Image (cartoon, rainbow, N blue to C red):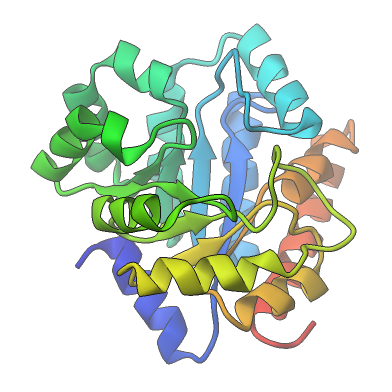
Length: 266
């Protein structure tokens, strides 16, 4: 059991899915990004994905890419990620770091795991790392009792689905759409199949992301998944408002809409 599993279980006991919100560290600046993460918690997010900026975010769409590039230009550092993790934990949500593998490797895998845990983090999502290529990372994470979260998609084979379910702790991250992250007019029908296949492979918890942008989307996915993951729609709240206070107000409204969705009130 972990803080992440406990939170997902608590949401299930309430008869709903968890709301998982993503924001990159350092956009529009470090302090404002942390304020935004705390605002998400206050508006109803159960779990917060904290993204260390990376120079080659190949799986992210244009909105997140631009935000990350802006953060890097302002000199954000990995230490800022751990600062954000502490703030989210203090606000009452479960912090999960979502990082590409190279920054973790540069930091040192064992040290990275230790620093995430010391800051209050419960797990790490690795979007560009597969379980068979991530044995060293899994070993480092297990040594610090840190959850490892890997991704599955509609194209994931049965064999790889089992491998991913076995290597993942906390939850399996399921993407119902092929391609990069971003908002969609509809989330498609593949998500339920991917979740079912992940559960058949042994996954206890499966959270679904990519394409979610409205309360209606959240409600649709919450009907079959353990958690609903939202990123681009939240980053856009900050990107579309030059004034940080206006951006935070827009963010709170969007999170409240999504929180209502996972509770069946969309």
